[in-house]
Structures are given as structure tokens and as C-alpha cells.
Length: 201
Image (cartoon, rainbow, N blue to C red; front, side, top):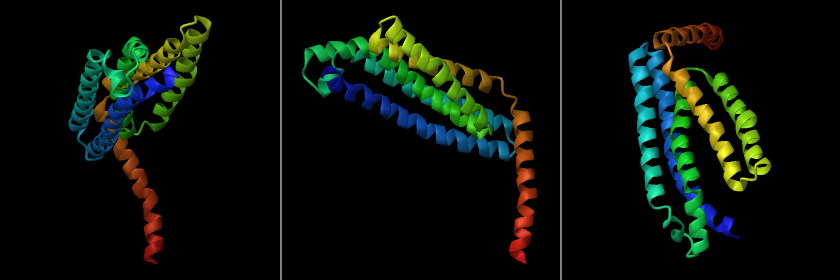
């Protein structure tokens, strides 16, 4: 019963922050893709880091606010003291989730804007199914950490995913990405010409 009562507080707050980061995800994808297509490597790099920093800042501020209000947060939804203590106990995990979910989606958006959809898919699958789920099951059931272990394992998978995406973004040669974008555009133009010729006929 206590789990069903305390779920809305953490879930709602984390969902609010996640919706913001998903908006930044779309913005990063479009802006980085447009800048690369226009042949502006410095603008693409600047856009990528600015949108990541903005989303991270919002996530950190939300995480700090949640942590400071951890003993009062549950009273928005219930008056039970036992629930309040449980929410305060799990709050550090919630803060970690909020911060990571404010950064990881934006980095994924940057990667999509660079045309790395397949790479992002492999990273997501690997970190979720080969790190997050096994680690959560191990901590939760083998070492008897319960919900903390399950949640901590998933945070661990998301953390690895975020670190990998940060490393890839940091090491990106933006001039090379502009060249790759031009190749893709040229390839698209070559494929489009026969279709336009058929329409004109």
C-alpha cells in the first residue's frame, strides 16, 4: 500500500523534468542537424553543448529542490508519516534519476542530429539490457537491497549510457561531421533526381 501511495510524488516530478529534457532532445536534434547541413561545425558544437548545459542545469536545480524537500514531498499526496520516511529514504535515488534523465535524452538528441541513430540504439540496448537490468536484479535480489537495488541498477545503466554519450560528443570532430552531412545530402539528391524526372514526365 505504501508503495502505491508514494509513487505519484517521485514519478510526477521525474516526469516533469523528463518532459523538459525531451523537448531539449528534439531541439538539439533539429538544431545540430541544421547546422551540420548548413556547413557550420562551430555552431553545431556550440548548440550541442549549450542545450546540454541548459537541460543539465534545470535537472540539477530540480534535483536539489527535491532533496531539500525530501521530508515534506510526500505530504502533497498523503499525510502518512511512514510514507514520508520512505520517500525521504529513497529520495537520493530519485535525485540521481532526475539529474541523469535531464542529461541523457539531450545527448541522444545531439547524436540523432549527427546521424548516429544506429549507434545510439546499440548504446541504449546495451546499457539497459546488459547493465541496468542485470545489475538491478543482482542488487535487488542477490544482495537483498530490494527496491533500492533495483532502482540503483537502472541508475547505473543510465549513468554508463550518459558517460558514453558524453565521451562520444566530447571527442566529436565537428568538421568531419559536416563532411558526412554533405555526403548524405549529396546521396539524397542523387536518389531524388530520378523521382523528379518521373514526376515531370
